[in-house]
Amino acid sequence: MIHKLPRPVAVQFQANWLNSDTWHIELRCSDRLPVTDTGYRSIFVPGPRFEGAADVAAYVRSILDEAGKLDEWQRYLEDSRQLKLF
Image 1: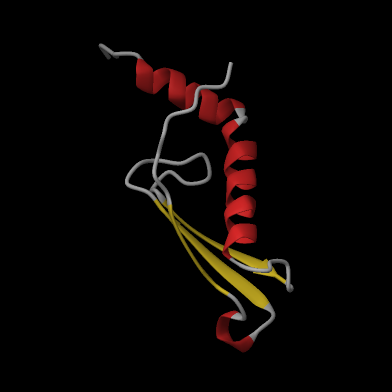
Image 2: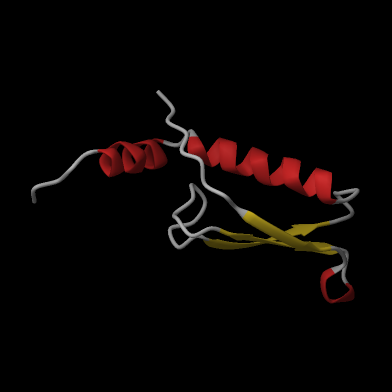
């Protein structure tokens, strides 16, 4: 069972990062995400992969969706829903 919690994620990106053929994408969230324990993730994607913001958003959604299926993330969600005495 996959639990989804709404977490607003700020996404910033820069094409041709440092005059290269690389895109730099930053994810920021005030809570943990399936791809980062801290709420921040910096991703470098080589090549002219994206046309613009819509493509970057779709890419970010896809990596979050895939990481959200992992057992580790599912255990974290389950544990965070339950109170722990020890």
